[in-house]
Length: 323
Ligand code: NDP
Image (cartoon, rainbow, N blue to C red; front, side, top):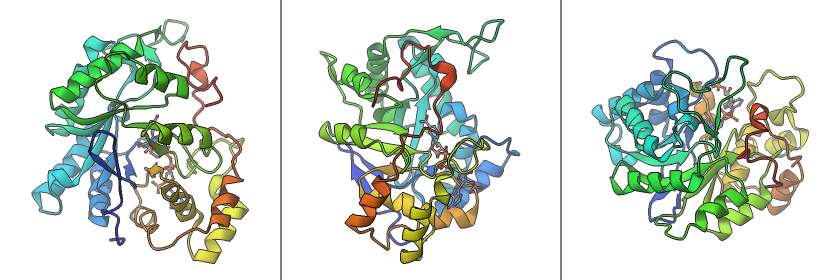
């Protein structure tokens, strides 16, 4: 196990703590049954204590099975694990929020999740069958839900003890402000989970979040090297990252993860490969210099690997604003 993987946490505004390194569990590939169980078990054995999941990933039953197996064999206790799930777009109506969370808990066979996030600020029409309900022409059926009402339903889930902390994902500054300005706000979002890596370093959003005591959780921190789209720049091939890596005897992946934890960003790289999973934990035994941090900052090009272009005409599309 990498020294310290379990010890590195950031405080959340509600008094809880979040491990700064987590394991992403979303996989675009069609995986055989059991692959996720095996990978998550291996991840816990390697030392991961923070697992990032979602209703939408369709594998919470397998993630839950792995967590329960590692509790049963004595590797961890439930309270050692920090599990995040997310409320999907078709469940943003306040009356549906708890139902989505309860489905997650039933799949996991757990009593609570540690962190529950509104996955996207954009609503889609409620649908039993489809995660992306569309009309006959294929146009997505949008639902313009009041996100502050959704937030109040999230607060009720925390009060009911079904979640320990609540937060948001893919919110821009003005959407965060809308929630922070709710007159009867009971709980602030503890975090905003957004795409974040050296090609989209989210400098302004990070400063804003820090000023409001909101933790920024960075998804796709490795720049999604699995994306098969030739127009995407390949982050892990960046010469500057390679150069810095050679100096520290680390891979570009370890450099980009270290960069984030050093600037106070939680990272959740996904790997289901034991060597890469382990490699991604070996980021607490070296430090980047100020010049190296600046050089990595300088690679920013505001590049989104997940622009969600099919949603650009949604009234709550978060990426029209600068941040
Ligand atoms: P990442 O940037 O984490 O890239 C994942 C890919 O990188 C996988 O194909 C993995 O392959 C490969 N990889 C992992 N480690 C290494 C390494 N050391 N060297 C080279 N390649 C490596 O992208 P994701 O989009 O998966 O983001 C991570 C997590 O963030 C997701 O799993 C999910 O939990 C969350 N997320 C949240 C979103 C949201 O809207 N809130 C949106 C997108 C992601 P392999 O498995 O073979 O190692």
